[in-house]
Length: 405
Image (cartoon, rainbow, N blue to C red; front, side, top):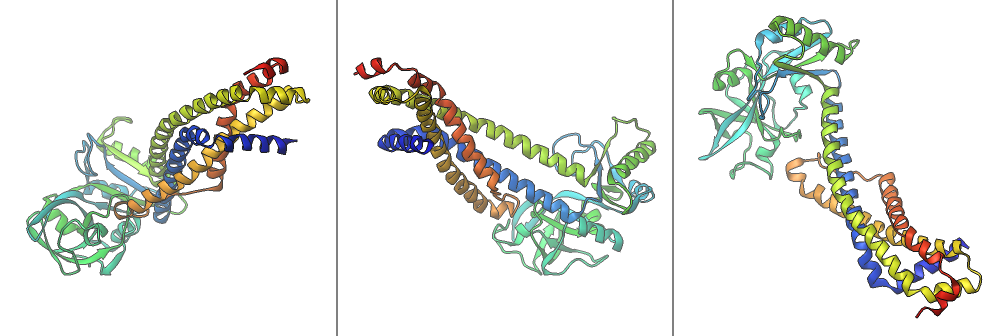
């Protein structure tokens, strides 16, 4: 019996193909937007989490508290200095720690000038290895910097690939002027992501010279011992630094974050942005639902005589109700199916288009639950939209329906 209801409903939709297609428009636009946004958002979260997983959850980042917008080490109210690094190294639960300078510098190549990030590498072996590991620094061509080597740099991936910053190609051996000082590129880096592929890396001695920063750091990265819980060690660092700076809790001019804190913060931001856009997309679904309701009311009027005939030969109110409810549900699900396909195509296009500047960070992630959920949701939207028209159809009196012209 239920199979017959589906055949009747499907036949009614195909006979009114143009109206059915136009009615589905609102549904498939909304579903396409939701599928694209959820898949891209989930893909981005997975990529970010994978990056942090490769670094490890045993890392703690200490920075000056920001007094405004800007890159790390710029526009900060608090300062992180060499003395802080010494203090942190002696805190219980810290296996090693390293400081870095991160600043914007002027870079010149063949009379072209731009501003880029410059990041320092420590010149002690243990600290150096920690920074390389924590930042996933890998050389694709050339070599890494040697300890105490001067006027040599590593070029970030975007500086030498097809997304290069300068019109002239950067290779190993290329000379660049940084804040007026001449440097030679000795290594070309793999893609790191997280906005770090437009940077250059130099030894700390060179960074301090060109930036005129004898004591300050932009950030300190610390690694906890295996037995210690990073969050507890982070609290310990905060207490020791507050005591050294004579500051009260809540009034610190520095921040201490674990890798887990950073992952949670980033995922929260991504989740909020995704929720806002999905909320906007729901407007299209509401418009689509109103369209389905309108179409179903029209369908009830057009088929009044058919309803009368069905009732005259024994169809019950429940049968008529189910026929129209299934029809509206199929209308919603058909729009949902088209929307899923368009959404997959849209997110894949965004993924491909963003590969040059976002690398693998903006990936589309399609799960069976997403696709099935989108289809089920669109069926539900259609079915709910058809409840009132179906009720109206089921309550018609056979005599009145047959008399309708």
